[in-house]
Length: 224
Image (cartoon, rainbow, N blue to C red; front, side):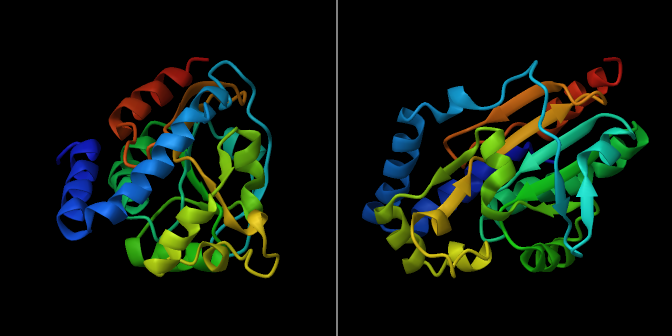
C-alpha cells in the first residue's frame, strides 16, 4: 500500500496536468496566505486538554466525546468536506487501518463542517466504518484553532468548479462571510483522559500526516 502522502502527491500532479496554471495559482495564493497568517502555530497544542463535545453522526444521532474517551484513546480527524479528494483519500486510508485501531482499543472519529446528510452520503459511498460527525459552523474546529473564513477570490474559484461550500455545510441561508467557513485538515490523538498527545494541522490542504505514525502515537497514549 503506497504511503498516504504519495497518493496525495499523485492527486496534485494529476490536477496540475489538467488545470490551467492561472487557476492553480489561485489555490497556491490561498495556501500561502493561510500559512502566512500563522494559523498552524495557533492550533490547540500537544499537552492541552481537548474541549468536550457532543456532535451528531451521519445518522443524526448525538455522539459525546466523553463516551468515546471512556473506551480508550481517541483519534480525531478534521476534514474539509466530501468534495475534497485529499480528504476522501485520507479517510479511506483510515478506513483500511481501522481494524488495527479497534484491535488496539483505539477509536477514531472524523469531524467536518458538512451536514449529517452529506456525511451520510460520504459514509455510504466510501464504506467508512467509524463515526463521521457534523460540526455546524466549524464551532468545535474553532476551539481547536482550525477554523478560518475563505477569502472572496477563493470563493469565486470554488463556485467555478461547482463546489458549493455553504450548501454542503448547510450555511447558505445565513449568507455573508460566516457561510464560507472551512477548517484546516488536522489529526489529533487524545488520551483517555482527554489530553492532547498529538496535534498536526497544515495550512496546505495537500499535506497530511501518515496514519501509521498517528497510530503509533495512539498506541503510546494507552499508557497515559
